[in-house]
Figure 1: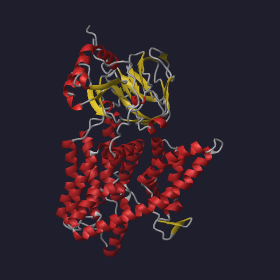
Figure 2 (figure 1 turned 120 degrees about the vertical axis):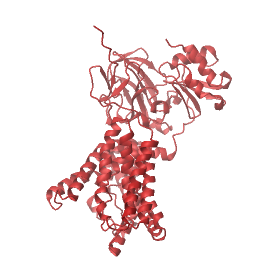
Figure 3 (figure 1 turned 30 degrees about the vertical axis):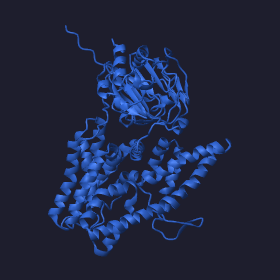
Figure 4 (figure 1 turned 30 degrees about the horizontal axis):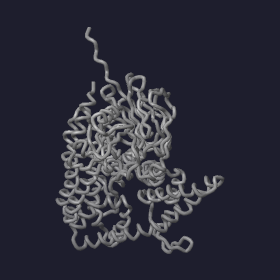
Length: 618
């Protein structure tokens, strides 16, 4: 039996004693201290205290993670100090949300996650088709090839359409209005205007760039759309706002991309193209390092288009392209980095995604599944890929390697480089671009996402259904270390798209916090589940939450538990990502068949797998 008094004494001593505590509240899983001097807290001693899971510091609070027993430990602290009470919190200053780069990475990962398997599958098909064409197994002049090429290339070609849907879900915008905007960006007559001179829109001159396969423009415009829709819904009469809002958003949003994003992209792309061309003429090895290292970064922001005219001009003038050789290093380096993830990760889902991403990257140069699905969200593999690209690109540029054809850099396109320049330097450059990132990923490693079992359900599995409408993301993406590293239990997180929480199974409510931000449930089979609405939302003190149940109440699957105003909570600066975790791993140690991507409440979220009973000796 847990000794709450001993835990309370250890915690109070570990934070520097009662005299160092300015205030104390608790939420669903942790004690939240505001300390007078955080340097007096002894994290090692706290983590060694029986009953303490871990510690973390965020938003001016020193948090001691306890788990399910936090009310008892809180009460025990109240008995030996002047602190204690209801455990309710009052709103405080907004917690920091991380630096801009980390927020950008999280956003990209969330928007791309639902698309990854389609990207990986079509990319792999593209790789096999490219191999078949290279080795003469299929005639590229046949309609069979045309059909296969279309169905393998269409998804990446019309990527803005898919991103419009996932970005709309992430930013809580109208999905089909976003789709209409993206459709205009890749509409055939619009793409036909790329490069055309003297374009105007109501007299406003603009430059048309290609938005095919682009990423950033549609994400930016959907983000702006989400704010525009909130404003328009607030000011327009109810009788017309449902059809007038999308009309206004599309009418303003699409030209805004053409008139603002296009010219800015063209200017920046021109600078990139001119700058890299000048560096190649002046210091070739540096130009190779820039191209090899930054090409994938240019692609992410759409700046690589500024180099395509340079490639074309060089090819038309000399019949060869020097600048494109280091791009091979960039592409193969990212493919090698994801291959390292494939070898190193213990996460079955990540490994199954890394396999096709590796093959499509190496064979066809399709690196989107690798970059957006794995390397960029994990950060280190992407950085290691850049390192490999820098070294390989510099070596290849020093060797004077060039291409005799305008090709998509990939393993299958390497014949375009053979015999053109110093072949030893080509071999060394290619080896460096592959070996360096692969070894760095395998040896240095990365933060491996929590394992989600993918085995089929067994008789002992308890089906936990989604309590929310939203998008499922791994716990590793939650902006709270205690949830992200699994300290509070295994499970998943959901980014809500509606403001209601429903019972995921028949259960007893074991914890209904007055603040409404968290609910603890226990199923008839004994699964203890925590649904924590948002991160640090306990600070709102119940504002924007409407709790519908009480502790001890029996609920049926699908019963409404909590309503909340997601827009107001996010405007207050809080992350609404909602962890759903099993908090009694001693009885249910494994979470299997976890869902991913968009989900509706009542759909299967994961299985909680019970410990198998030991066989009885006969």
